[in-house]
Structures are given as C-alpha cells and as structure tokens.
Amino acid sequence: MPDTDELAAGFEAEFERTIAADQRIEPRDWMPDAYRRTLIRQIAQHAHSEIIGMQPEGNWILRAPSLRRKAILLAKVQDEAGHGMYLYAAAETLGVDREELTEKLIDSKQKYSSIFNYPTLSYADIGVIGWLVDGAAICNQVPLCRCSYGPYARAMIRICKEESFHQRQGYELLLAMVNGTEAQRAMVQESVDRWWWPSLMMFGPPDADSPNTQQSMAWGIKRHTNDELRQRFVDMTVPQAAALGVTLPDPDLRWNPERQAHDYGEPDWEEFKAVLAGSGPTNAQRLAHRRRAHENGAWVREAAQAYADKQAARSRKEAAA
Amino acid sequence: MSEDVTDLTAEGGRGAVPTTGVEAGAGERKRRSWPLYEVFVRGKRGLNHVHVGSLHAADDEMALHNARDVYTRRNEGVSIWVVRADHITASSPAEKDPFFAPAGDKVYRHPTFYAIPEEVPHL
Ligand SMILES: [Fe+2]
Ligand SMILES: [Fe+2]
Image (cartoon, rainbow over all chains, first blue to last red; front, side, top):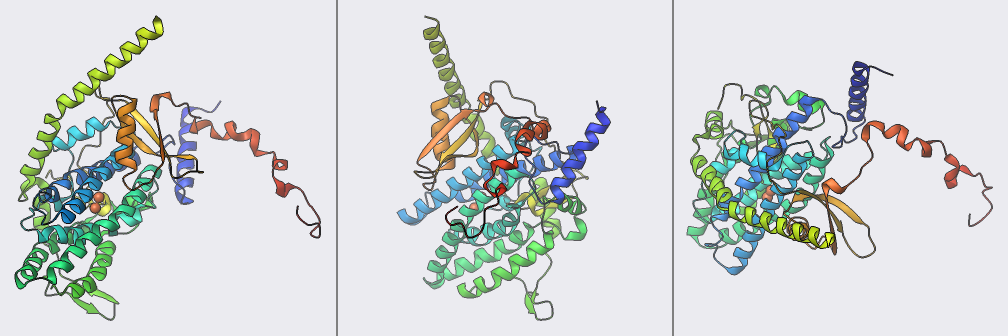
C-alpha cells in the first residue's frame, strides 16, 4: 500500500504528463491547488466581466434608433448574460459556489475588466464597442479555446461562436453611420477616440510587468503573452479602421516593414490601474446597479424556492398515500 | 487596489483582470441556493444528447426553461435533458486505470486484430 506522499507524487506526475501532452484537465482530476485557484480567479472574473458588460450596452436598448437595431442589441446583450452563465458553470466545476462568486463581485472582492467602467455617451459607442471591445475580446478568447482546463476551453468555444456576431453587428452599425451625415461621421470618430486606448488596455500590462504570465503559460492556461495579443489586435484593426475612414488616435501608429507589424504608442497604464482599482468614471455605478439587481431579485428566488418546496412536499405526500 | 495586485493577465478574456491579490473562493455552499442541474442537448434528429454545461434552478421545470435560454439561443437543439447533478453516478478519476482495465487487454474485440488476405473482398 503506497503512503500518501507517494500517492500525491503520482497524481502530480499524472497532471504534468497530461499538460505536457497538451491534453485537457477535467473537473475531477487531481490538480495543484495553485492551478485550481488561478483558474477560479480567472474564470470567475471573466464571468463577472460578461455580466457587468451588459450594462454599458443595455443602457442603449430603448434608445436604439429602429426596431431592427433594438432587436440586435437586445440579442447581443442577452448573449453576454449567456457568456456569464457558461463561465460561472465552468468555475463551479472547480468547487466554488455561484452564489459565493456573485457575492464576491458585489463586495468588490473580485474584479472585472476595466473596459466596462467607461460610460457609453453616444449611440456610436454601441458600434465601437462591438467592433473594438468585442474585437479585443475575440483576440483574447480564441486562444482560450485551447486552454488546458476542459470546462473553460469548452465554454470559450461556445462564446467564440457568438462573438463573431457581436463584432460584425458593431462594424455594420458603424458602416451605416460613416455613410450617413457629416454629424454621424463625427460621432463615430469621437467614439473611436474615446475607446481606442481602453481597448488596448484590455490586453493587460506589458509583458515585463506581468510576472505570473510564465506560470500560466506553463500550465497551458495562457497561450500568448499580453503584448503578443495586443499586437495581433492592432494589426487586425488598422485596415478595418481605414475601411471605415476613421483615424485611430495614436500619432505613433505606423507600419514597420522590418517587424512586419505596426508600431504603436504606449497606453496610459496609470489610468488603467486607477480604473481597475475603482476610480474609473462608472465603477461605483456599475457595482451599485449589479447589487440592486441582485437584491431586487431576492423575492423571485425565494418565491421559486417556496414553490419548489411545496411541490416536493406534495409529491412526497402522494407517494406516501 | 491593494499593493499585491500587480499581475494582470489578458486571459480574463473580456479584458485583463488580476490573477493575484483577489480572493478565489472558499467553496462554501450557500444556504438554500438552488440545486445544480447538468444539461444535455440533442442538436438535431438522429444525434445523441450531448452534455453542454450546467445551471441552477429551483425545480426541474425551471431547469428546462433556463437550459433553453442559456444553451439554445440559436437553434442548437431539438431536445433537452436536465438532470440534477447530485443524481449522477460517475466513475472515479483516481481509479480510472483499474476500472477500465478489463477492456485494456482485449485487442481481439477490434476488427483490426484479424489478419485477412488483401485480395479477399468486402471484409
Ligand atoms: Fe461575451
Ligand atoms: Fe461579446
């Protein structure tokens, strides 16, 4: 009979073998505690980002200019709720409770993406969010479809299938606007000016300031560094901006033939840290709204539970009779 | 932001989130939270139901409705099963090798085990 140390070493070797063979870790497999905790933080906060991310766009559903645009935006926002649900389900396979995660969000003990702490000031923002913010999310999320943790990877596959609609509807909306009046074109440019830098920040700080990236990459959670993903996003976006006839607000942005990639300026990382820490334009409002929605829904959750209890009691009684 | 929130990763998917300096989650089950259901969807006629994820619901009927809204917003299914997670019996991953061992050494259950001359047709 092997002792517990030998058993633990065996489990760890099995885990390392699975990762090295680029196979997936599944929920009931043994995994190092740090791997489990890293995944819980990432998946939970990814889920929170999807849920909080409904607010800036949901804000415009009633004001979207036509029934067609309202229906599209409603479907898009509903998808984001769905993304949050897929991800909470994936997080729960790691042994956390969904209620607990919701409370950690509301109590600010876990964070969400800084991008959702900027306000949506004009309807052009709806197009720009679809194009740039969902576009950046796609760059981040596509490699996650190959993440070493099975449930996270599978949730990402579902999400990526839906993101393409999000980005295209945004871009199409912008095309309609830039083909409209001078005032509409100006609205689009003004919106791009506000969202460009926050979108670049979505990829996180430069690699040199991201000490845990190596561990995440060794575990097969992360597949590319922050800077690699940011570069990919910039290179993809530049021709899309040209097709719209908008200017990306970065004087240092230019093609570098030696690197076969675009050079670009440095985002304001102090702003990024401040927004993530809670001093963005809408942090307090976003959390207050989420808390209010949760509290206002309490009676629904209680009523549904009371109904389920009553039905269960009735069927027990019938079974006994 | 507390001082130890230094590392941020793009792997938050929707944008960088801290991977250190925030709480992970203790795994404490909240009092009275709705039970967990596993969801299986048949994509179209002729296919098996396939596991797609899980959700919480107060009862079976609500679980079905939630499954429709969460997992079939684009006609991904023609039929849904929901099963309470605590009603599922699963093989243990720790003993997976011994558990599946009986099938491991029975190569004669596979057609490729049998050598048949090339020129014999339809076999
Ligand atoms: Fe999403
Ligand atoms: Fe999206």
